[in-house]
Image 1 (cartoon, rainbow, N blue to C red):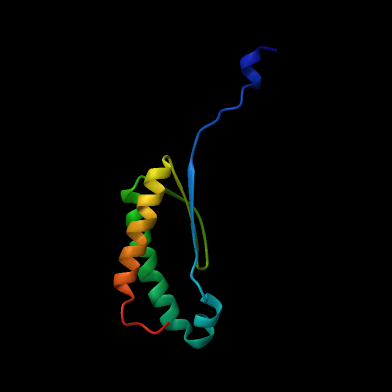
Image 2 (image 1 turned 30 degrees about the horizontal axis):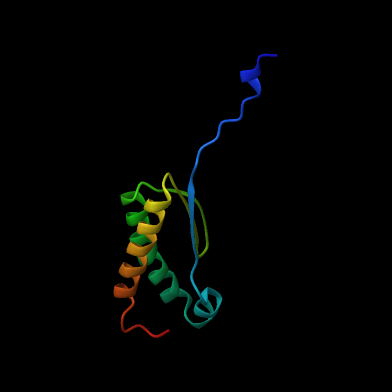
Length: 94
């Protein structure tokens, strides 16, 4: 066999993982409102993930898993999302 047939393709990637703190508690308190807010937050997150060259690899309930070609892009995206969600949730009960 040719040596290249056994070659494993490798690439570097940075993984971004996020989920909602207290999701089960929030769903028990007000399912409709929690889903409305989660949808709004996902729109913010999806926008920044795309803007920073990320690719959403998986979602489940309240979690998002995204892949970035650069650790710098992943960190900058995470910071931008934190800042945007902090502004979006100011004044909301915890």
